Length: 125
Length: 333
Image (cartoon, rainbow over all chains, first blue to last red; front, side, top):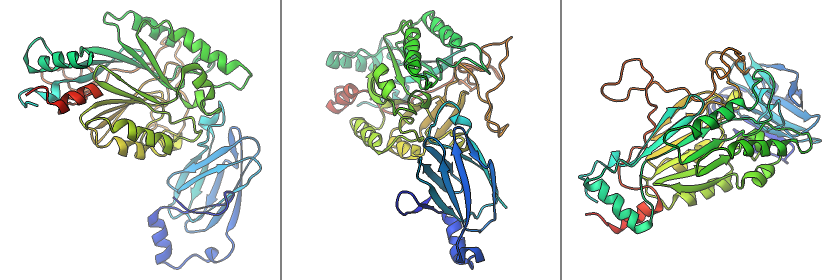
């Protein structure tokens, strides 16, 4: 679920309403008070680097997405992530995952023959 | 309109397997006598559209140009499907192709050649019309430009013998979505019809969240289905997932066709989206559309695969614009 859109390059994403409600109802985690940790993710046909990242439940992090070639997507419905990564324009999304598990995140912007298997894991523990 | 006629049986669509494609038959069930026959006769006089049984075929995901693992057969399954359709005793009126006609190529001129190759094979079909919509491999890289050059618009609608067909494009925007312009067009297109009109939507990706992690979804599919929700007789035919699947939401039934190139596994059995391995002893295994096991009323043999009922249950006489006009005029009392 998109809850904010700054300037086209920086996209702030939330998570499910339930997760937001939980964040409001309980004291925010210490990291949410400061600058979020930044996790760099690079896309190129037909893979993401790294192939897996690990986040902590309730931790606010900024995912900084860049592409080395063409336009890619970055989509994970359960975590409310739906971003486009344009060449030369880093995309930043900030999330506070409330649900633990291993989530497959895909490129959902068709980028060529191997597009169907371009994915990575986001682990929340 | 009289209630004496069994309106629900006025117009039915039933699907069955060809082995390598899905054959749907549309039966107005007019008969030679009775009120339903009277409806048909009057309608024929009024709008020139004679209602009579007809059938159509759905083919999908031919991926012309793809020639490698896991399936080394190239266009053989597609060509065999064409031969089979032409050999049917009762030839279908239409063939619908629900996307990924071709496999994409960035080699200059190659993708256009693959489009031409698809057309060469499809032109062998001895049917009155072949209607295609694009898959992401046809239109995802160029926004559908090449597809439009070869086949015309990427979305459109037409009527055929009492059934309203709608081809939807959920691939040309690169993301898995239909887009607001097309949804507005859909609303306008459907506004002509009574809610009982039999409607067949054919598109590439599923219009519901089948497996988002495998990109088996359309992000604004809910919006599309909300537009269709008032209509009581909606069948959605799609491809993309390279396997048979059935799903019903409200009065809309969603049916996936098998591919004619390779098959994907059941996502409930694996997280790995890899094509099923090729079996040289059964080269067409997992291709086409399998017969759906579904009870077919009284007398159906237990456990025996029977006809895939894709019935558009009619609650009123309706269908094309002509039928709607006919109803509004109250031609039958």
